[in-house]
Length: 186
Image 1 (cartoon, rainbow, N blue to C red):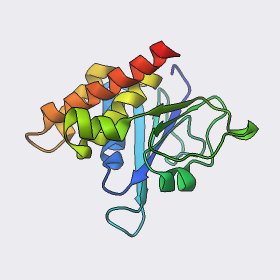
Image 2 (cartoon, rainbow, N blue to C red):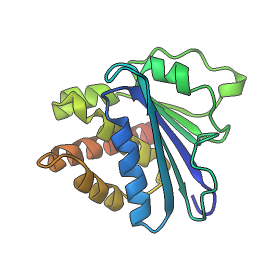
Image 3 (tube, rainbow, N blue to C red):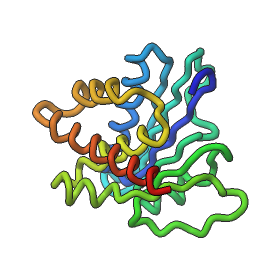
């Protein structure tokens, strides 16, 4: 990502923490001297309804704060994928959880698809399902290299609730490792 803006859309169920993940991604970009904007929306349900965070990162000024054509779509629920996954840059990529039931791709949606066990890593390796957002952030950064790991780790440490930094960093690193293994296997 040299001069072009990168647009990220992170979708999931309310309560999965993807809005916090979007805020952390934007914070990390700002720490590196980049311009970043983060927006969010969620359904009327506090938990369970579809929610999304959008982040734009750019070396230059950002003229419009909303994502129009995401380069990266990360979805952790079928509902979020149905609601927010209809448009992805043809040169972009899609990251989903392996538990999702995605429609078969067609010619219009032939972007690289990375299916990773985000939710099970959070539950089984980390021991806390609530860390799925940090696992997802690790997967996203391993696949996009949009910011440095050091900046993301600093942003995680500064944004997560007090006393949870190590757990969240462990989850982030587990997501990084899972995506790196997937890249090696391809």
